[in-house]
Length: 97
Picture (cartoon, rainbow, N blue to C red):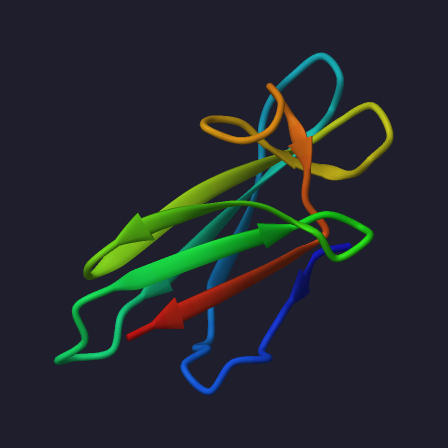
């Protein structure tokens, strides 16, 4: 399960689309899309693990799309410039400022 965190006054809704990938392990991918508010200059998507710790962020100006992939434990993971090759993600937050 993925929780969309809305704890900041600048948090905005995040568009989600679930796409099943034809893989041998039967995993799914979840594409998260975040669109900035008109007139704002910064867009941030923050990722949190199951203990609520911040494990990284993605930055943009008008939109951000991120793909999460399930792992062997049926948890969503993200790859890229994060703490490990496939960091588990349980919560996300999109902020437009």
